Length: 252
Length: 374
Image (cartoon, rainbow over all chains, first blue to last red; front, top):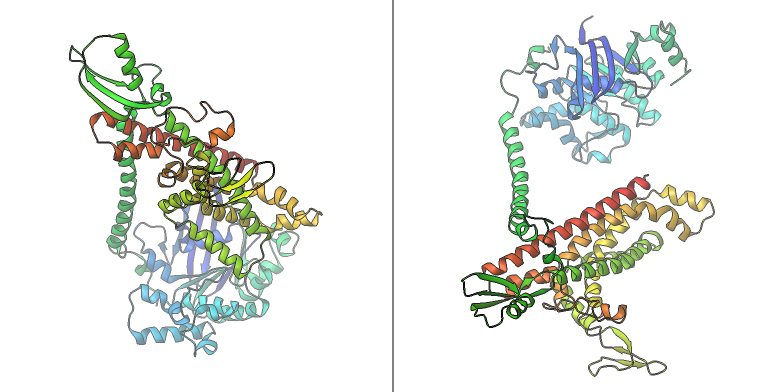
């Protein structure tokens, strides 16, 4: 089992407030890894460190430790940041399609990379939308506004947008938080289908979702990694008493 | 197959120079705007500060601030010493040196003495205008935000108020002249002949539409009309910004509509209303055109309260005003080195006055905000 992401002794803080303490874990390739934990435990922060989108926040900085993607440290000074973000796609909690057509949404990253060939763009759109299980629903209105879609469809459009680049890794920050149960089910089925091609890291505070979708689960609390094990082991035979308290619903 | 080596950048980041040049251009444009502001304030401070501040104690030329505005007399005496004295000082000089010859006498209007009259006039105009505008403006804002039902008519009302903000100040001046100086009603026993309409009331009084004449009250009313749209829109925004939950909770306790507004909405919108009145104060203090025909006079010997028998006399007197004074010094008299002192001194004092008002308003606003935090 190959390791896609290797996080080692990561300490991260916003200004003077430290939010991640010595986090160490390895995320395997082409499997779904879930981060669970109560609100404010640092799971979204950890996720956002992987594709360095925390750089947008001025007070954010990594105090110690490293994140390696297939052996390359993401914080090295000569990293190609745009390429990193193309290879590590991200889907956000609240779906945020651009105020453009469905077609333009999916090809956005190709356009900013300089791709102009119409044929390549069309093919990418079809592959991505098929991969996101959205093609049949939108194939005859590709040039209509993205806001005409329902919430679940918009989130799947965001997933299609993320996978249009054929990234190595897909990061999903609570992708079903803003969706109704039916749409949630569709997205979960999609995740199980996508893991054949991509490494997926998903943050969720819905433990049942973690049980359904993921292969390995990491439980975090107050910025520390408490336990990291295959999903069934974590939920049925938790080693740590804090993990047991959380998964049985005693707190959080 | 994924090649991790692709993550390593070979040379400079993508479009590095393009991003860098865009960022530098935007920074350059921002700082050149700051440069313009610095030049403006720098010139005024450099030329005006020497007029107001002196080398020896008490470091501020209080005479400039408190003396009345007079004509400047410039002359040489027998020893060739050049004297620059205001009219009253010149008369004193001649009294103390009877029979002395003076040569090369020149007079410069408005350039001698101090600027006490304009300062007082501007202060009175500003205070009066703000009081009137806040009363009418906040009332209108409360009605529009809390009571009025949304309808095409109310949309038209809002549009009319917004359009008022775009009217040029000279048009306000002419409006003020036509309405407040010539046409508003006055209760008097002796209506003037040019009155538009005289309605007799009981015991000899009549309501005469003859205007308030060029006076402080007419100037305040005109200036108030000018800043009304700013205050109404800002006050309405502040009232709308107060969460609906406050009103719901108050009504659920059994309070009436007006009690809700007075206790739960208005106090929390005060910081926003004060911010807009701060902007309005700075605007009002600096306007010349509206007061040119309605209140301002270039030369006035007495303070508004000298010889006044009651508040009505103060309100109906004409006043000098700082911006009008600056205009007079710049445009109505020939330029010379002797007028420079008065000009830059006036401009500097004017800036200081506006800065003082702004800072005072800011302090008041932050105090209120701390007290009424939500």
